[in-house]
Image (tube, rainbow, N blue to C red; front, top):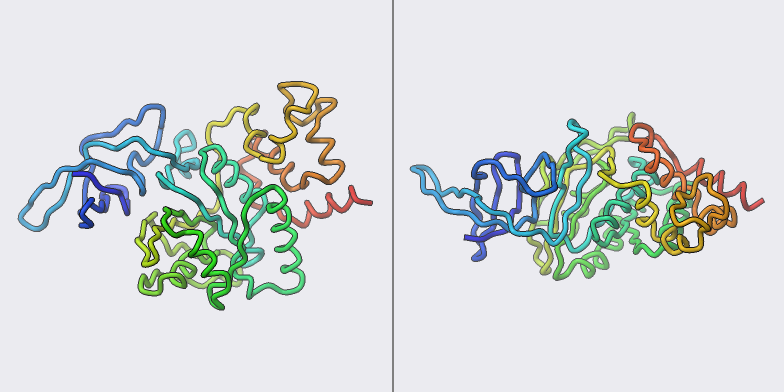
Length: 325
């Protein structure tokens, strides 16, 4: 039998069969997918073949084959730095939820996520969530960020789940597609899914005022069928987003605004750091490329996995304003 993995808890997988039944399955032996050292060989979104097993208590299944993936999105495993964690597979689009200070989402985190989506060929859309909570300063920050990413070519949505602003527009973009929601803990993923599909009753939690951090309410990635002909993969909140296996020479290709200018650099192997006649640095000095994006690029290039979570866009704006004087 063939079905789609809707939930993974590490040892058991909830598989939806082609006729719509859900079966709890285990994996047969150890899977080794060529070229992928993963902590989770089977991911939500995978198409799998399985056999039914009838025990005295219930009908369960054994997965013995994974179909080739159309795509997948990964990040570094938290505990095993040499390995990757596949977040989900066979995705049509991914929505990254961004909040300005409730909790704060840094440009470095956004850019790492976008670079990974570009590398794996998945369309990424930014959702600026909780716009009802913004004051004059944070609204200014939000609009500035939105401007940066729209100029590059990324679609951006402004949403308030509690006031139902932008929710219908989001639903329209999801019809007929498999969408993944991602972002830090506390950015409002589960609340937004509940606003679109109240019958799901996904668990939500309150942001800690002291730390401005969200609590993990989603423990495992899980796919849901929505009533308006859409499927969504809700993922656990992620603190950091470690980039996996990218050669220094290829990283700038995953920044669309850099990629457009690469051919104008004097040297084919230009890394856009110290080299003379670099088109990217020239564009940066003219304020045609955002400083925050260039800073993110340098941190990825240098393999700085430790400090990117503490960045704020205030410093990047200061640098940008300096060039305009």
